[in-house]
Image 1 (cartoon, rainbow, N blue to C red):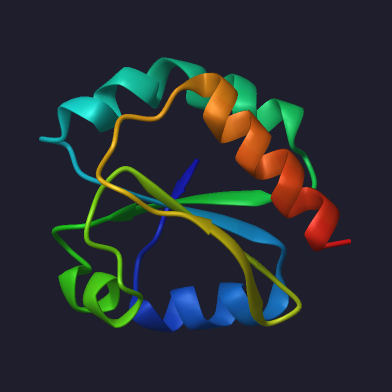
Image 2 (cartoon, one colour):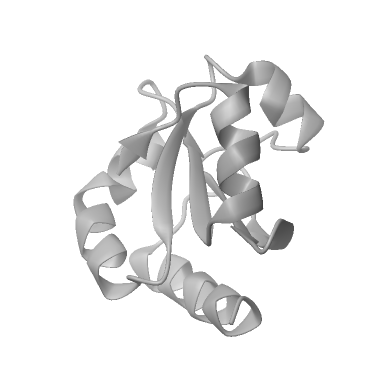
Length: 108
């Protein structure tokens, strides 16, 4: 998973690619729980480019996008937000995969 480097990069990616942004932070225990399954999830959903967004570095972007809990996922395709899985709750591998399956069908 690539790291988001700038707000400009976020805007470019969300306009041009089919992309999943994972909003997370190093200190977040619920984020740590899903870390081991993320490589498998990425491999199972090759339609998406995956980017890690450090919540602490991009707090203004989180506010702009109404991301108030982590881990959270936003999916963009063709310049539009396709779907979001945003909450402060712990997420399971099954929930993330179900969300991405739904988002995949919306972004084709």
